[in-house]
Length: 309
Ligand SMILES: Nc1ncnc2c1ncn2[C@@H]1O[C@H](COP(=O)(O)OP(=O)(O)O)[C@@H](O)[C@H]1O
Ligand SMILES: NC(=O)OP(=O)(O)O
Image 1 (tube, protein in one colour):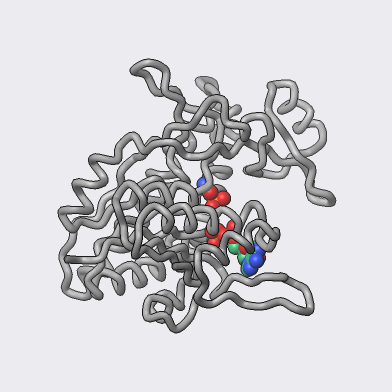
Image 2: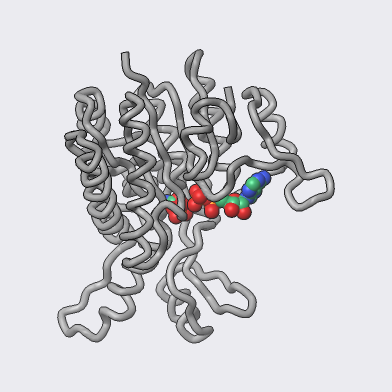
């Protein structure tokens, strides 16, 4: 039976601007094609904060000059970011596979992920997004009830909540495609966060950490492996200190200990570890790899990367 993997692509896999993304997805497509050639069933998820910020700014700031302008909520912008990133990614993967003589349908599932309205994250927004604003614009945002943070020397930016993913609404469609050996891009940008109200889903003004959604997706698909591709080959403990040390193969217990000791960035490495630990603990025989894009195949052979078992 084929091994099933969920791959989470970070910022570097996508770039930020439109031309950067076009180039970056070609490189990412090469890695996904390598996995498929090795015989893996693949589901992909990805970051979206820069793209979401760009779309939100375009619609809500520059869009003001249009007479028929209406505000675009964050959830709509999130859906747009999934479509825009998925479009580039699925075409790049399709082309790369065809170049290698492999025909495989690659599709993007517009995915909603439910969140808990009482999630503590709604009280303390942490996800910084969008353009830099002047103090005047920041004050106007605050008046609308939005949260803003100052980045010293740079200006002000919007900040939204990052609630935990609860359930993936379109999971059955994703499962069907993955189990039919098709390549699926799902839960992009952590999924469109939605609140369940009876039979209705209402978009939430939030952004789910894509690594946590990747872990949830891997769990729901009963994947064998969670691959988190980021900008570093290995995760470090004591980062930036004299006793900095790269982590190779570690156990879940060690991973938990390092998390508790506070070795990882709260908004970058910690969600990767949380997702990995939760995924591995659900069933025996699973592993998670955190490594850089160019080291993926070596990581899968156990030669590099931070591997948690
Ligand atoms: N303990 C750590 N070891 C290595 N990198 C860390 C650590 N803590 C924080 N980081 C930072 O996390 C960054 C990767 O996170 P981020 O850019 O958010 O991820 P993504 O690749 O998912 O977009 C690295 O570039 C590094 O600066
Ligand atoms: N949704 C999300 O976690 O995006 P980033 O990885 O771009 O912050």
